[in-house]
Image 1 (cartoon, one colour):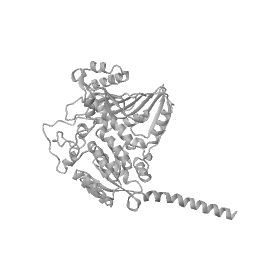
Image 2: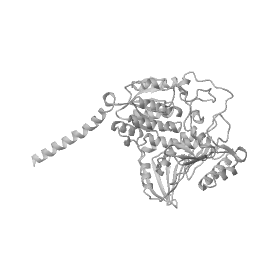
Image 3: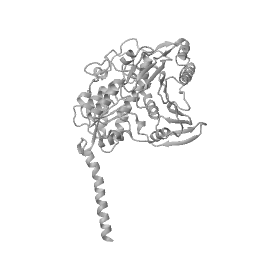
Image 4: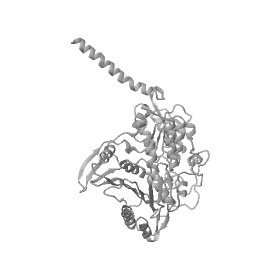
Length: 486
């Protein structure tokens, strides 16, 4: 009996030792002093600062480099790490940072127009990548990041953290299993207050601490025609994608996830406008996007104005200002913007099931960096590309649109009853903000058909597919060119 216990003890000890040796072997496959994974943060004047803290708090991870074209922001980051007693290297030019062989992961939260080029350059330099949403400024760029990630076998995580939510993942599986019947509509809402950015009378001075050539990068280097360089780039087509690509990409991604669609939609149209004020912004603050998938439509709504003139409150759709509602034959599922709780209701509005739980999106990337398995990523770059591209194709429809009366808009969308109802609610919303579409007009976007697999527009459409396909990419400013071949 004693011999048996001794043999069992030796066997269990050997198994335990083997188990502890596995992480050591997997860590040895990763570059990094003492097994640590070393992260560089590129762009941290906004979302990047929060992401920086997310990585800093992970065991076995060190933030070792910072990069920002704003020297004031960069100096502030350097002081922070000095106060923490943590060594840090700083750069203003991401190309210099990428020459550093002691960096394993590059995180980028720059303005949208830089996302793809930084991601691709980092991949080509041998780094894994965390790229904030939207992953691209246009459809071509997103596909090129996917191509680069696959070619060089790099782990590339998209900053759509809802993908790491066990609550949403379980709800997706539950709905797809047919527990609420067939999905009828997946609807995303982004009702987020966006006030006027003001209007300038001429070019504005570039802040002295900013390298404007590097800030512009792939975009045209044109005079600054708005009060603020930072943040308000979201509302200018050369650098941003509006709130559809800013906040809305999160909800767009969740809606597509529930539908289980892995290609771009075969038909898309958009309508809306920039209402309630005249400023230097170009992107719509009120918008409807209709993706006509075969299984069920994906309808997205953007509203930047409040419930009514001078109000501080925002509209809600079935109790939500920012969220996703998946309407099914047997009820609906509500996914709020905190991603920690999903609730399912029957057709009478009675709660029938709840999913809870949250995950760590940064830790998920690190797990994949160690395992070298793309399948371990919760938000692989392909998912980020597809959902970002749905925002881009919606915006392409809008940008090819023309001003019409509300009657003309209704006539154009009359074959899509759900779109009609959505437009009626939008009209009511604008009326409450003292905006009359009879005088202001609405932009009715082009009705575009697409080969979802090839990611190209097809057919004549309203304005011809050639104009739409031209907007799938952009003219790049040398040397900041997203390559045709990665």
